[in-house]
Each structure stands twice: as structure tokens, then as C-alpha cells.
Image (cartoon, rainbow, N blue to C red; front, top):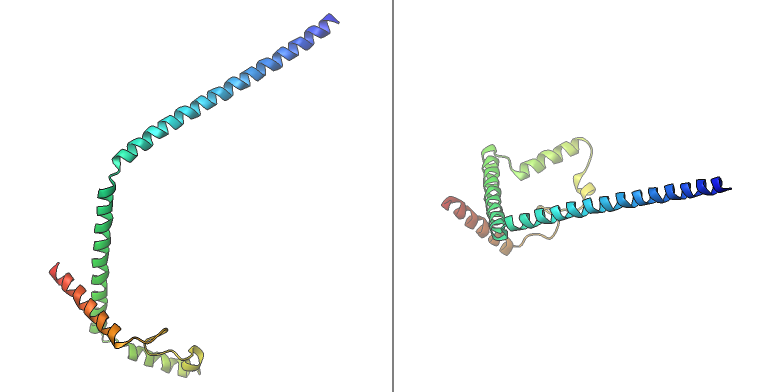
Length: 145
């Protein structure tokens, strides 16, 4: 009987030792996580000090400005190429309609009543004048630069 009690106590002590070992491993893991998070906080603090928001804003504004210039230059090049090639939207529509007629399709009935300016409300003369003035202003800005 004494031997059985001794064996039971040994098993209990072994289980308790494993429990203590597991708790020590858990504590060690938590300490490593805390150290890693401390290092991350230090790195984030250093990054925040390095970032200069006003200079970043200036860089973004300069990028937007250059992007606008590039877009205007692209539009100018497209218009120039279109003028040089002599392609007119009316000519394109005529060719498309002739092809569709050959295929036996009627573009007007399939697409519905679409005005010459495309979908949506027709442009007013004031809007066209405003667009022309805006385009001329942008062209002058490009010539200055």
C-alpha cells in the first residue's frame, strides 16, 4: 500500500512539474512578445520622427501639377496627331454606318436616338465657349513653361 501511495505521489509531482514548466514557457513567450512590441514601438516612433508631413504634401502637390502638365501635353499631342492624320469624327461615323449598312444593321434603331454630341444633354453655347476659353488658358500656361 505504501508503494502505491508513493507511486501516486510521484505521478502527481511529475504532473505538477510539467505544469510549472508549461507556465514558465508561457511566461518566457509573453516576455519575448513584450520585447518585440517594445522594439516595434521604438521603430514606429523613429518613423514618425522621419516623416515630414509638410514636405510630403509639397511633393504630392508637385506631382499633381506635373501630372496635370503631362495630361495637357498629351491632349495637345493627341489633337496635333488628329489634325495631322486628318481623321474627322464625322468621317469615322460615316465609315461605321456604311459597314453596319453592309451587315444589314441600322445603327439608329439599335442604339436609339443619340445626339451628335453623344449621350446626355446637348452642350450649350455658353458651355462650349467656357471650354474653349479654359483650353486656351491652359495652352498659354504650357507655352510659358
